[in-house]
Image 1 (cartoon, rainbow, N blue to C red):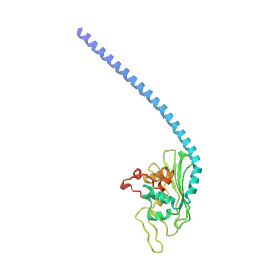
Image 2: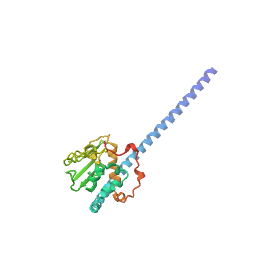
Image 3: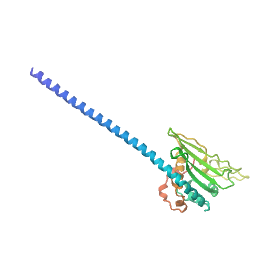
Image 4: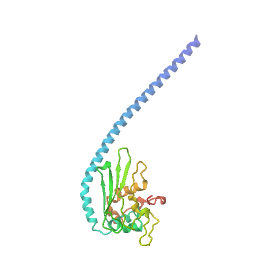
Length: 242
Protein backbone atom coordinates (compact mmCIF):
# COMPACT_ATOMS: atom_id res chain seq x y z
CA UNK A 1 0.00 0.00 0.00
CA UNK A 2 2.76 2.38 1.01
CA UNK A 3 4.65 1.64 -2.13
CA UNK A 4 1.57 2.26 -4.27
CA UNK A 5 0.97 5.58 -2.57
CA UNK A 6 4.50 6.69 -3.26
CA UNK A 7 4.15 5.72 -6.88
CA UNK A 8 0.96 7.76 -7.23
CA UNK A 9 2.66 10.80 -5.82
CA UNK A 10 5.46 10.46 -8.39
CA UNK A 11 3.02 10.20 -11.27
CA UNK A 12 1.15 13.20 -10.00
CA UNK A 13 4.35 15.24 -9.97
CA UNK A 14 5.01 14.30 -13.59
CA UNK A 15 1.53 15.45 -14.55
CA UNK A 16 2.12 18.83 -12.88
CA UNK A 17 5.43 19.16 -14.74
CA UNK A 18 3.74 18.42 -18.07
CA UNK A 19 1.04 21.00 -17.37
CA UNK A 20 3.72 23.59 -16.66
CA UNK A 21 5.51 22.83 -19.94
CA UNK A 22 2.27 23.12 -21.91
CA UNK A 23 1.62 26.48 -20.26
CA UNK A 24 5.09 27.79 -21.23
CA UNK A 25 4.69 26.52 -24.80
CA UNK A 26 1.31 28.21 -25.06
CA UNK A 27 2.72 31.54 -23.84
CA UNK A 28 5.61 31.25 -26.31
CA UNK A 29 3.22 30.68 -29.21
CA UNK A 30 1.12 33.68 -28.17
CA UNK A 31 4.25 35.86 -27.91
CA UNK A 32 5.45 34.82 -31.38
CA UNK A 33 2.00 35.45 -32.86
CA UNK A 34 1.91 38.91 -31.26
CA UNK A 35 5.43 39.61 -32.54
CA UNK A 36 4.36 38.59 -36.06
CA UNK A 37 1.37 40.95 -35.87
CA UNK A 38 3.68 43.82 -34.93
CA UNK A 39 6.13 42.94 -37.72
CA UNK A 40 3.26 42.90 -40.20
CA UNK A 41 2.19 46.33 -38.95
CA UNK A 42 5.75 47.64 -39.35
CA UNK A 43 5.93 46.19 -42.87
CA UNK A 44 2.75 47.98 -43.81
CA UNK A 45 4.14 51.27 -42.46
CA UNK A 46 7.41 50.71 -44.36
CA UNK A 47 5.51 50.11 -47.60
CA UNK A 48 3.55 53.35 -47.07
CA UNK A 49 6.79 55.19 -46.33
CA UNK A 50 8.38 53.84 -49.52
CA UNK A 51 5.40 55.04 -51.55
CA UNK A 52 5.67 58.50 -50.01
CA UNK A 53 9.42 58.64 -50.69
CA UNK A 54 8.79 57.73 -54.34
CA UNK A 55 6.11 60.41 -54.60
CA UNK A 56 8.51 63.03 -53.23
CA UNK A 57 11.31 61.84 -55.55
CA UNK A 58 8.97 62.04 -58.53
CA UNK A 59 7.92 65.56 -57.55
CA UNK A 60 11.49 66.79 -57.29
CA UNK A 61 12.53 65.06 -60.50
CA UNK A 62 9.95 67.23 -62.25
CA UNK A 63 11.40 70.30 -60.52
CA UNK A 64 14.95 69.30 -61.53
CA UNK A 65 14.08 68.72 -65.20
CA UNK A 66 14.15 72.37 -66.41
CA UNK A 67 17.39 72.94 -64.49
CA UNK A 68 18.95 69.89 -66.15
CA UNK A 69 17.82 71.28 -69.52
CA UNK A 70 19.48 74.63 -68.82
CA UNK A 71 22.61 72.82 -67.67
CA UNK A 72 22.72 70.85 -70.92
CA UNK A 73 22.46 74.09 -72.89
CA UNK A 74 25.53 75.45 -71.09
CA UNK A 75 27.44 72.16 -71.43
CA UNK A 76 27.01 72.28 -75.21
CA UNK A 77 29.09 75.45 -75.27
CA UNK A 78 32.04 73.68 -73.57
CA UNK A 79 34.22 71.70 -76.00
CA UNK A 80 34.59 67.97 -75.24
CA UNK A 81 32.75 68.32 -71.95
CA UNK A 82 31.30 64.78 -71.81
CA UNK A 83 34.45 63.18 -73.21
CA UNK A 84 36.48 64.89 -70.49
CA UNK A 85 34.00 63.93 -67.78
CA UNK A 86 33.99 60.28 -68.89
CA UNK A 87 37.77 60.12 -69.15
CA UNK A 88 38.14 61.70 -65.70
CA UNK A 89 35.80 59.19 -64.09
CA UNK A 90 37.76 56.29 -62.49
CA UNK A 91 35.31 53.62 -63.65
CA UNK A 92 33.84 55.04 -66.86
CA UNK A 93 37.24 55.92 -68.33
CA UNK A 94 37.97 52.18 -68.47
CA UNK A 95 35.14 51.77 -70.99
CA UNK A 96 36.38 54.01 -73.78
CA UNK A 97 38.81 52.71 -76.37
CA UNK A 98 40.88 55.16 -78.39
CA UNK A 99 38.36 54.90 -81.20
CA UNK A 100 35.48 55.51 -78.77
CA UNK A 101 37.17 58.68 -77.57
CA UNK A 102 37.19 60.00 -81.14
CA UNK A 103 33.46 59.32 -81.39
CA UNK A 104 32.78 60.92 -78.00
CA UNK A 105 34.17 64.20 -79.32
CA UNK A 106 30.84 64.45 -81.19
CA UNK A 107 28.76 63.79 -78.05
CA UNK A 108 26.90 67.03 -77.34
CA UNK A 109 24.29 66.00 -74.79
CA UNK A 110 23.62 63.30 -72.19
CA UNK A 111 20.20 62.84 -70.62
CA UNK A 112 18.90 60.57 -67.87
CA UNK A 113 15.13 60.45 -67.49
CA UNK A 114 12.57 58.38 -65.64
CA UNK A 115 10.08 56.46 -67.74
CA UNK A 116 6.52 57.11 -66.55
CA UNK A 117 7.64 57.43 -62.94
CA UNK A 118 10.50 56.45 -60.63
CA UNK A 119 9.13 52.92 -60.14
CA UNK A 120 8.75 52.03 -63.82
CA UNK A 121 12.37 52.55 -64.88
CA UNK A 122 14.66 55.05 -66.59
CA UNK A 123 16.46 55.77 -69.83
CA UNK A 124 19.95 57.02 -70.65
CA UNK A 125 20.27 58.97 -73.92
CA UNK A 126 23.40 60.09 -75.77
CA UNK A 127 22.89 62.80 -78.40
CA UNK A 128 25.57 63.38 -81.04
CA UNK A 129 26.36 66.09 -83.52
CA UNK A 130 26.61 64.93 -87.15
CA UNK A 131 29.64 62.65 -87.34
CA UNK A 132 31.46 60.30 -89.74
CA UNK A 133 30.77 57.22 -87.61
CA UNK A 134 27.03 56.54 -87.54
CA UNK A 135 23.75 57.87 -88.86
CA UNK A 136 22.05 58.12 -85.48
CA UNK A 137 21.91 61.45 -83.71
CA UNK A 138 20.35 59.81 -80.66
CA UNK A 139 21.30 56.57 -78.87
CA UNK A 140 19.10 55.44 -75.99
CA UNK A 141 19.22 52.58 -73.53
CA UNK A 142 16.09 51.98 -71.43
CA UNK A 143 15.65 49.93 -68.27
CA UNK A 144 12.01 49.04 -67.59
CA UNK A 145 11.11 47.52 -64.22
CA UNK A 146 8.36 44.93 -64.63
CA UNK A 147 5.79 43.92 -62.01
CA UNK A 148 7.18 40.41 -61.57
CA UNK A 149 10.49 41.86 -60.38
CA UNK A 150 12.39 41.48 -63.65
CA UNK A 151 14.02 44.16 -65.78
CA UNK A 152 13.57 44.65 -69.50
CA UNK A 153 16.45 46.35 -71.31
CA UNK A 154 16.12 47.86 -74.79
CA UNK A 155 18.65 49.84 -76.81
CA UNK A 156 18.96 51.82 -80.01
CA UNK A 157 20.35 49.68 -82.81
CA UNK A 158 23.27 51.74 -84.10
CA UNK A 159 23.32 52.31 -87.87
CA UNK A 160 27.01 52.59 -88.63
CA UNK A 161 28.20 54.36 -91.74
CA UNK A 162 29.99 52.25 -94.32
CA UNK A 163 33.33 51.01 -93.04
CA UNK A 164 32.84 52.58 -89.59
CA UNK A 165 31.05 49.83 -87.69
CA UNK A 166 32.65 48.72 -84.45
CA UNK A 167 31.04 45.36 -83.68
CA UNK A 168 32.59 43.73 -80.63
CA UNK A 169 35.13 46.50 -80.43
CA UNK A 170 36.74 45.87 -83.84
CA UNK A 171 36.44 48.43 -86.61
CA UNK A 172 35.57 47.19 -90.07
CA UNK A 173 38.01 47.45 -92.94
CA UNK A 174 38.00 50.74 -94.80
CA UNK A 175 39.75 51.22 -98.14
CA UNK A 176 42.00 48.26 -97.53
CA UNK A 177 43.26 49.51 -94.17
CA UNK A 178 42.41 47.50 -91.08
CA UNK A 179 41.73 49.29 -87.84
CA UNK A 180 41.18 46.90 -84.98
CA UNK A 181 40.93 46.91 -81.21
CA UNK A 182 41.81 44.19 -78.76
CA UNK A 183 39.41 45.86 -76.35
CA UNK A 184 35.63 46.01 -76.37
CA UNK A 185 34.07 49.24 -77.59
CA UNK A 186 31.80 51.20 -75.28
CA UNK A 187 29.21 51.15 -78.05
CA UNK A 188 28.63 47.42 -77.63
CA UNK A 189 26.71 48.61 -74.54
CA UNK A 190 23.94 49.55 -76.95
CA UNK A 191 23.56 46.01 -78.24
CA UNK A 192 19.85 45.30 -77.94
CA UNK A 193 19.20 43.07 -74.94
CA UNK A 194 16.19 41.94 -72.97
CA UNK A 195 17.08 40.41 -69.62
CA UNK A 196 15.10 38.91 -66.77
CA UNK A 197 16.60 38.11 -63.38
CA UNK A 198 20.05 37.43 -64.84
CA UNK A 199 20.63 41.02 -66.00
CA UNK A 200 24.31 41.37 -66.82
CA UNK A 201 26.09 42.86 -63.81
CA UNK A 202 28.64 44.90 -65.71
CA UNK A 203 26.12 46.59 -67.99
CA UNK A 204 23.84 47.11 -65.03
CA UNK A 205 26.59 48.76 -63.04
CA UNK A 206 27.60 51.03 -65.90
CA UNK A 207 24.02 52.31 -66.16
CA UNK A 208 23.87 52.90 -62.41
CA UNK A 209 27.17 54.79 -62.39
CA UNK A 210 26.01 57.05 -65.20
CA UNK A 211 22.59 57.60 -63.62
CA UNK A 212 23.52 57.94 -59.96
CA UNK A 213 27.03 59.38 -60.08
CA UNK A 214 28.00 61.06 -63.34
CA UNK A 215 24.64 62.57 -64.29
CA UNK A 216 23.86 64.37 -60.98
CA UNK A 217 27.13 66.35 -61.07
CA UNK A 218 29.36 65.81 -64.15
CA UNK A 219 31.23 69.02 -63.35
CA UNK A 220 32.93 67.17 -60.49
CA UNK A 221 34.57 64.86 -63.01
CA UNK A 222 35.13 67.51 -65.64
CA UNK A 223 37.12 69.35 -62.98
CA UNK A 224 38.77 66.04 -62.03
CA UNK A 225 37.82 66.33 -58.35
CA UNK A 226 36.47 62.80 -57.88
CA UNK A 227 37.80 60.36 -55.30
CA UNK A 228 39.25 57.48 -57.33
CA UNK A 229 39.29 55.06 -54.39
CA UNK A 230 35.49 55.05 -54.33
CA UNK A 231 35.45 53.29 -57.71
CA UNK A 232 38.42 50.95 -57.42
CA UNK A 233 37.78 47.57 -59.04
CA UNK A 234 39.54 44.24 -59.21
CA UNK A 235 41.65 43.61 -62.30
CA UNK A 236 39.37 40.80 -63.41
CA UNK A 237 36.46 43.23 -63.33
CA UNK A 238 37.96 45.68 -65.82
CA UNK A 239 34.99 47.01 -67.72
CA UNK A 240 34.70 45.34 -71.06
CA UNK A 241 31.33 44.32 -72.35
CA UNK A 242 30.60 40.71 -73.29
